[in-house]
Length: 359
Ligand code: KG4
Ligand code: ZN
Image (cartoon, rainbow, N blue to C red):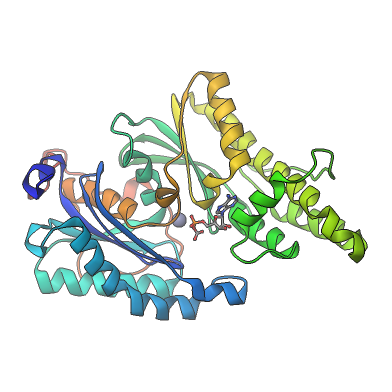
């Protein structure tokens, strides 16, 4: 589609995402159409069994501008076509965020175009809109990744409520740690998922935590410890044979916790549809169970494709396009906020300005 025609759908925005270990740049039109989506996963961390913040920052320094150039050329747009630049300002690793912010600010200043800072988690909420033109609020979202496990209700774009979150480890973090315990390479979530498919149904039973706090919260650290204690009690010679069953039992308990949280939040909100995003949304058992839950309740469920579930800049550009269309602009003193939370109040709305920004 020619750039001019695409722009009728909203501002044309370059998104930059560097909050953790993915260096990403994308060009999106409005919050529905992806023109390019470049994601470079930093492989350097695999040797360390987890993300090393200093290494992540250095990799972002090396990779961000090339990712931006690729996103622009894949989208077949020039700088003069863009209506603004959106960049993740938090939550995430502060050094990693600062690299993306510095690149975005330099480009915005050099090219004289608007800049908008985006909450990474709000980006995940927008990822549901990018593939299905019919998808619209109100909807519930489970964000389950290596860094976050949160349930949000999207009443409308820009209007959110947090219904629950993990009180300790994120779901993906638990998958990674248990996977490494079972001898899998980091990031171990997808490998553990595959191993669990080979496991027997009558393996050990692990507990699903009950969190004594208001809201639909999650806890995975007790489950992780239960798996560790069980694993340590197995004689070393027996462990290779037991791995699939332990993986399957862990996956069952982790997925049950997530499904229970989603079911309770659906009950409370009466949401007509829900989506799942973040790396753990790719988990096969979780997908099966949540699909069944949606069928039982007669409501819609969406799992964005894997490239939109994991960290990417298309979702950041989409949220940025929405804010730019709503009249929001940030100054060059925009700072990183490593523990930024999703809040409707942070969103600047100008009712009189129609979507479309300055296009
Ligand atoms: O959204 P994501 O790319 O963001 C970060 O947290 O950076 O998610 C990555 C997380 C990792 O913890 C990974 O192990 C987990 O998602 N993951 C999975 C699966 N695929 C990725 N966990 C369980 N089952 C999977 N199939
Ligand atoms: Zn994320």
